[in-house]
Length: 598
Image (cartoon, rainbow, N blue to C red):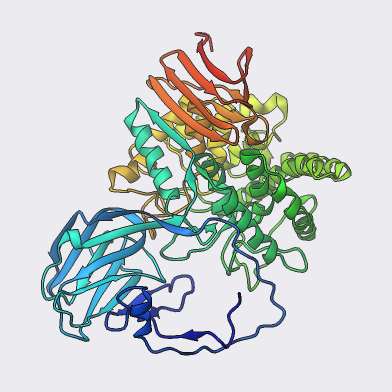
């Protein structure tokens, strides 16, 4: 069935506020006198219906949304409603930040009178509010008030300021409705360390709020953009915690659609927007399909995206000078060229050496994954080329961006030191020295804090996991002063912030890349074959964490790992095998004593 001139339409009573562009999403004006009382045929027949206008657009190919719809995940009432300000306002507090809609029973008001609802995620440092989105409610004059709820827009809010009400609303009459793409939770984590539990749960809850319309956004209140950098940073965590294979099938179609004739890619898709990024952003076209394959064992994205991956590398080649990728130009669909982003005060992500180091290491990561992808999709000759590209780029990075006098890379920042270690370009005889320099600089320069940005967080978490630097990384997470996750929590965060100092959004996808560490390091579950068919089971034990329990759903069933002290119990579903230190295990329940020497 398709819409045509035989269809009829009528005004729903809802009108947009704002222009539906990043930074201007506005809200809704809802006229209670027009909104139908229900969606029953009797209620709809009372409305005035007219023929619709039809529009024909040539030269556009539409892509279907191939994932679950957005659904309400939970409804919860306001924690408190208190008088606010000098103009008869009421401040509604829901106790936590949420992405969703407001369901409200307005008290009786004269017909046509307008009540305002201003949505914000937290107070400004000076105690004022700065709402990003606003709803208008136009009263029908009903003696028992009006029941109104968003239908076509949503908000990020912990607080709602209600203005122009004649009486105080009852907290029970105001509900937040959290919404997202309807994927399933597939993993759980719990430990004896309440700080770790709080950080994990904050990251997990943040990811619960950032996927809708078939892609992940950076922040749902200000931009709502599908940044590839934010996506790359959170993909591993998201795909461990939730069953999001259909979401990535849908999102990667948007990236395929967005590629330009010359192979250029935007930094965000869908809806390419003049926003900042670099190869860590555009490389989403390679890394997201690869991680989806490893997470779920489904190779379709590799096959669908492979032509675009190759085409994008042609664009990369055009801006490679003397063997190193340099800055590509700003365009109408993409602007600033970045290395890392959103680092804390005192870390200069604009340092040219850092930008070059981060971006060329990102390209090394792409080449390593493309080598494997090419073999899987049946292009072994391409795999040889990608291996040669990786080797050549690794050599150039070491020639141009490694400083032998102090064993540092780039600017010496944490991401600049960890990224070469993660992607394997550090010469074998220097790995220990570079590792020691990273540990030393973290203590002396960064006061044992995780002082990095969007790119650095997952890079350091993944390197610490693979290098078994568990005590070191655990110590970074335990810091309660700025910058850090416990600093966020101690200062009222219920979701991760856009910046370490709480600037801008309080619900953002910048810093969720540590989520994988809870499962792959503490739980010890690292996929060694697509879809977890074979895993490396290697739980790491930070000093002071006595118990860890992790469950991880796979295409074959659920893996369960429980560690108490130095005793490990684990369960593998049928079809999954594991290598644990010195022994191989197949499906079933197992119990081992961890070697005290490990």
